[in-house]
Image 1 (cartoon, rainbow, N blue to C red):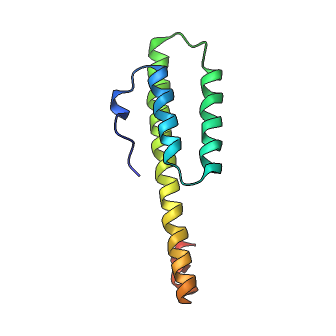
Image 2 (image 1 turned 45 degrees about the horizontal axis):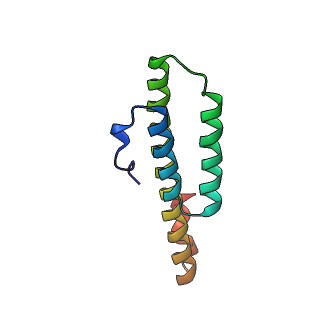
Length: 100
């Protein structure tokens, strides 16, 4: 999964918050979505008193990178799970040995 469109436009904490919640909506299950929405809310509470603009930009950059990593990881896990499911349906469990 690539970053959602608009990642390069995020400049403020509010824009980041909205962007990250949009990313959460792209995740595959309600449980995963809720987990990451909770993490986003907690991170915003932790950094709510940050007033250094340079530090805020660092946090924004890192949060977008982290969101991209999570989206890619979830996408890769789903692809592997689908491959595993298909191989099991076809009776080829050994075909995935190279993924272990």
